[in-house]
Image 1 (cartoon, rainbow, N blue to C red):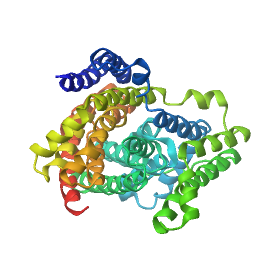
Image 2: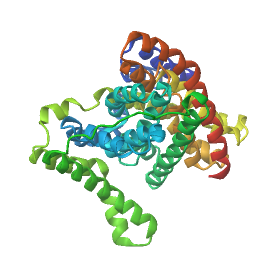
Image 3: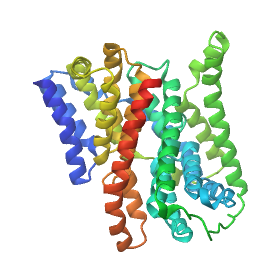
Length: 431
């Protein structure tokens, strides 16, 4: 009965958040308090202790550092240069858009930031290139999503944090790397399908021109070097540890490299170099995302205390054929993400199920994590979800927006979800 109440509270939190447009995390905190203290008998400090401090710190510190590049224009100019570099291959324009969005997202801008400044640029390019705007929307959405899955970028950091919270800190880097690679491959296949299957897209790029961006300023060059240096520093020791697992020195250093703490050091360096005003940088920290992820995380913490997570894992492991489990997670993730956030709701709700379910079924946890992410991100192009709503917000006119809405809802979403389901099925066979 109590587990049913907790599951219902998660669904109600998402529904109220969607209906009211208020932060889902706030409603989740209310349910965590009421259920935890008055139904489970937890102490108030224990309920507050379910707030995922480490996840919050990593999101805060990493976004703080990358906000310098956002404020001073480094990220936007880098995106324009990536598009300009592909000017000789206009037929590959959707892939150029994908590369630009993925590159900037991987550098740390994160999904929402990339979509906010790349979606309007993409629709303008589609207009000039006589390219179907739906193809451009899919390309930029896939680029922002898969790029942000990079191990040191916004989504990748959150995935690793959730895996660490689930007790898989030893393999979280490896698993997040697999998520990144598989999401890139899926994105490229999906864009290729939208690019080459419809006959109307066969002449993309004829007559399109790209203006060369202004050169990077001294400040922007410095910021770009700092970003690259931080990425190298954060990645080099985990990679060396994988290559040389027996080396005690590398293992010791790798255990002390924390992306959040490293990001704080680089943020201080950026402040001292005056790369952007402190007030503007702090103002762009994604507090809404932090509250949503951590609020849902508190409710999941109460669910763990109540045994709900183990119950759901046991039910899925005993009632579903083993080969169906990854596909079921992919579809559930897609359905949830249709109305809500992959990072704020889907992953915090589903990731804690994975360790117990993997132990009960013998499925590699990496497969389940990957299917959840690829499945949930496949429906992010929905007009009711983050990606689709940002695309609609970038449309120049109300007529264009009205035309784009049904195409996103009835063409892009079903095609993406079906493709993700098939992709995850084959992935589960070979991983």
